[in-house]
Length: 311
Image (cartoon, rainbow, N blue to C red; front, side, top):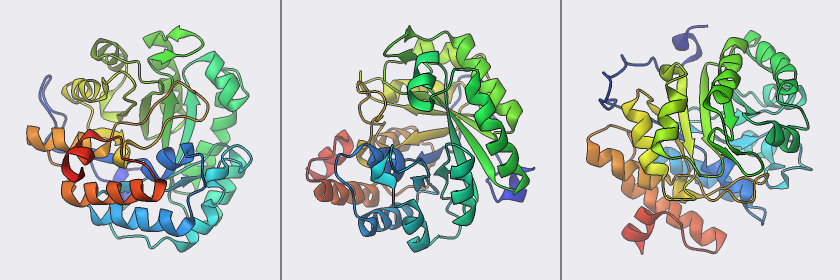
């Protein structure tokens, strides 16, 4: 189904090799990937205000929640309540994570129009996170994607552990590309390549992206070794124009203890503003939002730009 039929932005022509895109779409994951890693349950009212503030700051894609079983992610057990209370903004997308057909049923009942599935690039993480082998995970996702597309939903495919796995070590780029290609063939409109434990370097990023259609790829970096911005810039120069990030640098991975926070949206916007790349995001408003959320979580924001701007 064409992007315009789903209300999705139509991509501009790819930049020439080595050039930066004129505009980058920021896929904000703070309300889902960020808050799912909190030890305390964040009230629905706070989550709703967080989403409203992020929309006010100009972010056009806000990953709102997840329909993972509450037993596994009690922090997001309020998904239906949150979506029922959400005041959707015109021009803003609110995708949700859907792990299986039961999750898709819940998403459809809640009126969701954009979903994401979450695959693994490694055998061990597939087993620990999905209770499936690397190959078996596709049998679980296939009916989810086919049903979602039949209902007119857009489907994104996350691929985790694309550069390193805490149990298996470095990941073969060909293995990552094979998982990605199977998700695209299944019907996903975009891949988000995740550096789940934050070990990637620009050279690794280049080797993986060389094997995939970059116009269908987003990147999702964690900043464990301080490489998230360098990796992002590498991806942009190779033709990627969608970047996942989390307001205030919130997040980690509940199934990978060595994972630290996501690339902070403020740090990303600061870099892109300096490069003359458009994002549509008001940095001051965003920093205020992250400082506000940090107060509710009872600790300083890990974002360097938030700390520099708000102390």
